[in-house]
Image 1: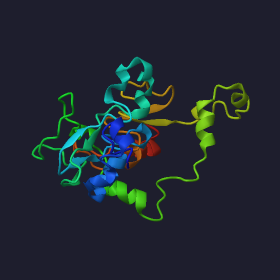
Image 2: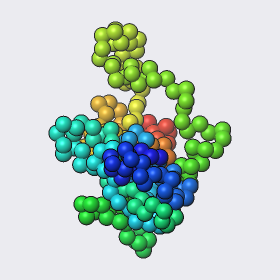
Image 3: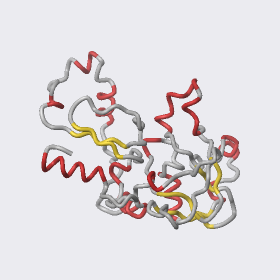
Length: 241
């Protein structure tokens, strides 16, 4: 939590104010851990809402939002996400609550602005119900985090062009032997401008972060059904999204 609730490098190094100096509901603590406006690592991000109940400030740690404009570290933009990050700004102050994903419609009140003058988030960028996220992570016998996940799957894919791996590939055309569908988080690791998969069908879910592909609510803020599960179910039945 010290990493997540540090406004800048100085706060992280000194520990003042500390995470314990902020009053957070359980929802706000979970949001601080996984929401894309707080969590700095893109592969752990969801779009579950925003802080409520107190003032927030721009979070510039561990990297600033505009990392993509800094030549030396621009390549890290995908790893650390592209959304403006916020942090509670009133230690020993009010109880911070959480504004759920569906609390950004007309009449729900304004969203605080980031330093660039634009709102930290909008209804189109919030897709996951924080209560359902908490349930999927904590209710037994569900296993949201696979502690047995083999890292060799990831390393083999990332090094698939290496001779020692490629020469042992048994089914070289296996991925194209049957219809395929690729589900992409529009604001996730690949980014909104990523090209479609070189084969099969590609479905891009606008506003989604990496984990939202699994966690997004069945009804979205635009009133339409959740696009990833809808496309996947249609694909199973018809062979097309």
